[in-house]
Image 1: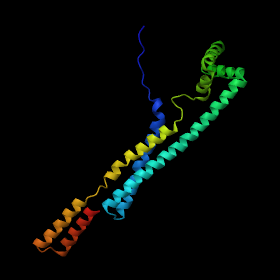
Image 2 (image 1 turned 90 degrees about the horizontal axis):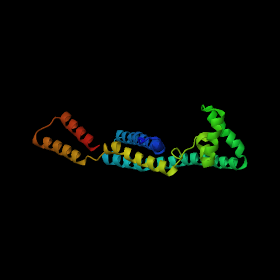
Image 3 (image 1 turned 135 degrees about the vertical axis):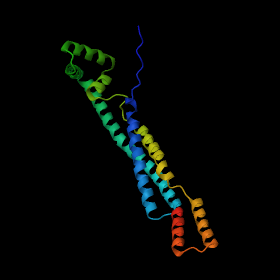
Image 4 (image 1 turned 90 degrees about the vertical axis):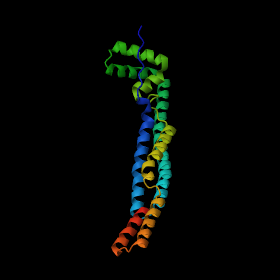
Length: 207
């Protein structure tokens, strides 16, 4: 008998992947906004860099806390439904069997086959069968608050690198610009307009 090929699906990654995308998006947008705003105010490059770093820490913590609370709410709702389904199976198994049979009939099975499938699945794991086919709850899609929090925080922190790195200090460049201006002024007479242009370029290098 030929072996079935192994399929690697991506559905089991959807929980942390969604959180990572949201974290990365927040990291890029919020840090870029902070860096641009502080730089536009004329702050030094070190101040801009410090602002970006502060945004990194605050953003990562904020996204982690937000994802944890949000996904924990989902996990609480799932737990409540699981507890409810357990109670219904314990108190009224016949109704639950009929409910499962109706689900399989709606998917195209005839009555006799639907009853047979419901009986066999409930004999193996009644709760799992109802969670999967009635409520749509599976292990792959289960809420994992800590996983979502870590994924969001790490993605948010990593995405801060680009906007924060663009604000790296340029003290060497500013020193070179100022030295060039001083050298030009000492060696030759420079017009006032040229001096002002040179000073302006040096200030740009500082900021």
